[in-house]
Image 1 (cartoon, rainbow, N blue to C red):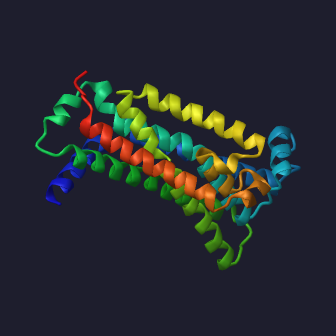
Image 2: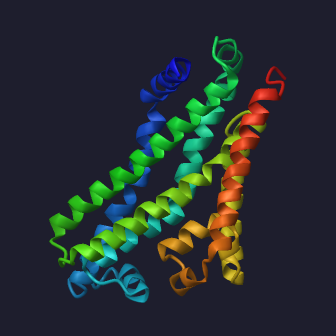
Image 3: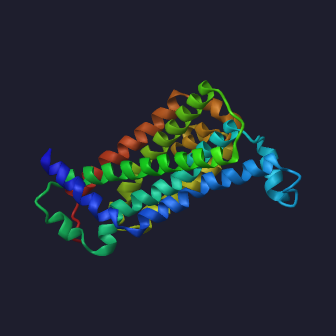
Length: 262
């Protein structure tokens, strides 16, 4: 246990002072800000009539200036944008040593390879959870500032449940990204896979089978696909979970047994 804690501390220190950490918070934090813009447009459609594109978009989605719509925006941004941002985080955590040429130094440490990879997964989960919590707090601040229409506590609890469930589904998809990072020995392979997964998620969802494609599930669950959320079933979540498990064990196996000196 002490060895695992030591490996975790080392990973935390490596990422604590990284500029990438704050870049992800700024990029991910754009979602609640844009949500606030939509709320302003729906509250004052005449005053912001010149913003026709945004106004039309907001009306097509069916937004109203209240907490229900705002929570929906946060969840949908998490389910769709989170795939990209969380994938970027996983690519950075698992691929940085290869790009910086410090992989041999990492493997030379008196710590087992399994503990090192577990520490990376822990940092990945903590980083993503911090992003999720940060956006929620920013959302509460913006919603309070805009004095959005109040809703009952039951509705708030339901929205929070959907928000954190969407976060969990999105976070699980980071394990295959971790595998591609160490397999590709850097950032390029995992980021390319994230881009491919995002494109395929849109294509597969458009064909009506997105509920069986893991990278489409978080977005559909968040409500980004509208009525398609109702098509999610046990098999949808099982496929996503099996994908996450396969990515996790593939990452551990490759990190533990592959030759990283080449």
